[in-house]
Every structure is written in structure tokens, then in C-alpha cells.
Image 1 (cartoon, rainbow, N blue to C red):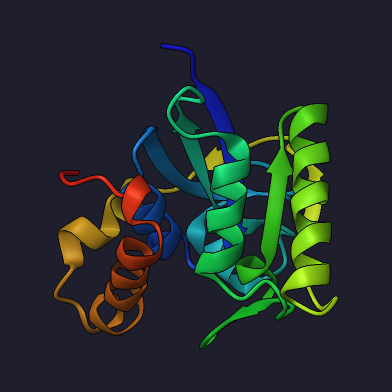
Image 2 (image 1 turned 30 degrees about the vertical axis):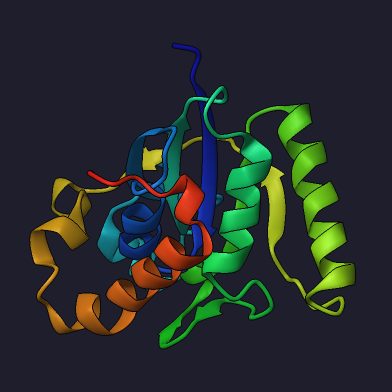
Length: 179
């Protein structure tokens, strides 16, 4: 199987991991940190907002089943790309909207989709950063599969579960039956 990588930050990585892991063609999703300058950051350092890193998800996918542009479309519709350094009650640069590309093709596709959506849907208000991936740092193990392990927790019920329901409705043709 041919695999590719996408790296997106769309607020809390618990949410983005839970959402992208439910898509056909997605092989694996890992929460982590990227986009800043600190080396080997910890969750506590990220929360300070001083590292320059964002909470991101590394999405390994099969481009024969789901293409990068499909992931971009979903990315822009699972969070609010018009709020700077904030997603809902999660506030700080670590929660910013960011696309970290791994190739010139990804950069071109990200800019193209963002420009189209900015014109047609978001009235020119998208603040998503698009920059090259320098290094992805995997998050601590307790963040992995957080929603699956903690789905009854209030944050998961109030924030993540409704997003999963919305994803299932809007992208039913891309939704996995079993995770």
C-alpha cells in the first residue's frame, strides 16, 4: 500500500485524532506537536504557549482511498479556521489552525483549497497558517486514542461526540463503519 502523511492542527488534538481516525483510507492518526522551535517539547511546555508549537495530528493515509485534498476539505470543516489561536474554549497559540505540508504539492493544494473556501464560503476570514513541516514530535502516550479511552468524560461528550456525529452525517461516504 502506498502511504502519505498529512499534518494538521485544528484545536485540541484529542478531537482531530478522534475525527480523522474515523475516515476510510486513514491508516493511523497520532497526536503530537509541530510548528514551533522548541526541541522535544512536553505537553506542559506546549500548554504554556511559549514553544511556538501547536497541537497537531499526524495522519497517515492511503491516497488511493482518500486524497490529500479530501483531507483538507474535512480539515476546514471540522473546526473554525477563522479564529486566531482559539477553538471554542481552547485558547492559545497551541490551538491555532495550521497545515504543515510535507511537499510542494501539498503546499499548492493547501493554498488552492484555502483560497477557494476563503472566497466561496468563509468570506476571506480564514487565518489558517500554511508552513513546511520541520519536525513532528509525538505526544505523550496518555494522549493517544484519548477519545476511545475516555469517551464518557464530559469534555469528550460535550465537544468531541457532537463533532463525530456531524462528521458522520456530512462525510457519510468517507466514514468507517468500524474503527
